[in-house]
Structures are given as C-alpha cells and as structure tokens.
Amino acid sequence: MGLLKGKNKFPVEGKTVLITGASEGMGLSAAIQLAAKGANLILVARNVGRLEEAIVLVKNAAKSPATQKFTYISADVSEHNYAAAVIAQAIAWNGGAAPDIVWCIAGMSTPLLWASEEHDVMAATRRNMDVNFFGSAEMSRAILKEWLSPENSTSPKAEPKHIVFTSSVLALFAIVGYGPYTPSKWAIRGLADTLAMELNLYPDNPVKVHVVYPATIISPGLERENKTKPEITLALEKDEPPETPEVVARRAIAGLERGEYFVTMSFLGNLMRCAIMGGSERNSWVWDTLIGWIMPVIYFFVGRIMNQQVRGWAKMNGHPAKYVKKA
Image 1 (cartoon, rainbow, N blue to C red):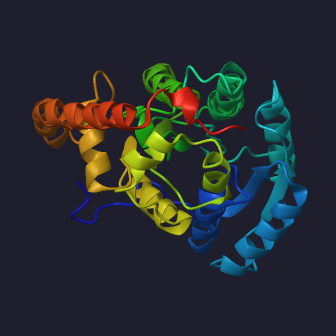
Image 2: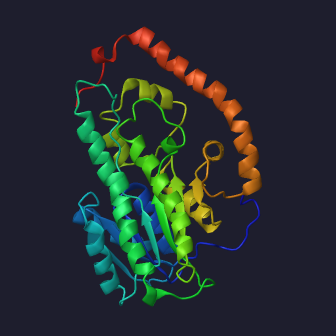
Image 3: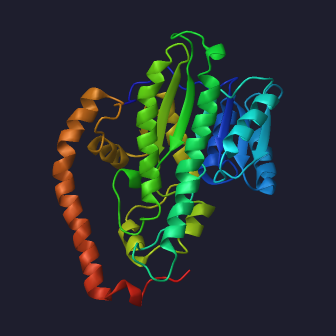
C-alpha cells in the first residue's frame, strides 16, 4: 500500500504532460507540482487570462527553468470534438511528438435535489455529463488514437504513456443532492475499466490507465457548487472538511507514482474504493480483497445511519419544496 518506497511508476522529468482544467484548483496545483518534478506542461482551460496567470506560476515552480517548456491551449472541454484540435496543437508545439501523459481534471458540480421544481435539473445533469464525462472521454479518444497508431508502436517493455481520469469519491459512495453530478463520475470509472482491458490489444503501444478519486476540494469550483447545494447535503458533509488543492494534487501524484490504478486521497477513501471494486483492476489483490470482504459489514451500518439522518431531516424540515435553494 505504498508504505515502502519503490520504483517511481509515474516519472515526469523531461516528459510532456497535458492537463485539462489547469487554470485553477486541483488542475493548477497538479501542474505546479509536476513542473517542480521536471515536467514540460501544456495547460488546457477556457479562460485565457487565468491560463496566462497559471503559466507564470508553473514557470516559477520549474525544476530546470532553462530546459523545461510550458504553454497553454484555450479550449472548452464540453464542446463536441474539441480534443482533436487540442492534441493537434499540442503535437505541433511539442516538436511533432504527442504528450507523454494526459491528465483530465476539468470538471464541475451542480448539486440539486432530483425532484426540485425550482431548477432545471435535467439541463444541469446534461451540462455535468458534457464537462465531466464527455470532456474526459473525448480527450482520451483523441490521445489514444495517436498513441496506439501502428507507426507509434515500440515494444511491451517500453516506458508506458499514461492517461489519468479524475472521478470523485461520490462514484464510490453516493449521497443525496448529487443526482446531476454523480452519474458523470460513475461513467468515468466505467470508461476507464473498459479501456484498461482494451489496451491489452496493443502490447507494443504500452499505455497505463489511472482514475483519481478526490473528495471535497477548496477551490472556486466549490464556491460555485455551494450556490445550489441542498441544505441536507451540506449537513451530511459537515464532518468531512475539504482539502486544499495542493494536498489533493500531492496525494494524487504520490498514488500515480506508486502505480495505482484507482487513486484515493485518504484512508477512508481507500476503504470506499475496496468496497466497490467489482471487476476493476486492483492496486493490491491481497489488501483490496480483504478490505472488500469487510466493507459490506461497515456499509450495513453506514448506510442505515446516513439514511436515518436524511429521514430525520425530512421530519424536522418538511417537504423540500419549502426550503430548497433557488438558483
């Protein structure tokens, strides 16, 4: 479980890393930390002003400023077929070579009660799916088409490329209020599991898939999602303080360096991961199996406690239409 330091399975020094959602929050923190490890960075986000500010921060963190390279590409990950143009620009900037690592971090959350009459829940759900799932899916398809082409074949022993998806702990344990958001993060896991198996078709084009599962992150995104977050959701989350993006990025990178397939940010997150593995690849077959046996017993109590909290909330506050936040 990473207690003993082994070989770094996610080396970035001298490599080119493309990160979506890199202008703020976890994406920016990951870019800064990877720059400090010697990576060349391509930052992708919509807002050019924030990207320019991010480039300055990344350059200041560089391990070898004289040799490392940094650029940004403005793009909206929710737009259909956006990724092909981004990868083409990245290859042109990178001297004709595709990025070695792609990390899809861009995301959003619009918490709402599913039956709310005060909001357009389905529009919010489609928007979350476009940004969180399709934004990552399109990027993964664009880069894999490049990495897996016959002319880019090397050998099974070559150092692998890496595609990193960013999901959420809510894809491990769902709670009330995240109906528009959680399905988009569950879908990422389904895509990752499928790709992890499909990539066995290309032994001479080695690629590793990873999924990062952060919890609540202190960021501008959290401020935006709290504007619509139901009171019951806030109440259920009150005992789990949000983490800074710097801490989340550091823990995510540490898990990637250990070679983990599913990367969680805490001991609790790791327990949640073990509880839902199903047919997914394991980080450790022994540990994950043992904890997977124990977690159904724990969830027997956790599920009942949380559902009782929700029922108690309903008893105290009445029908949600009486108190739900308006947009």
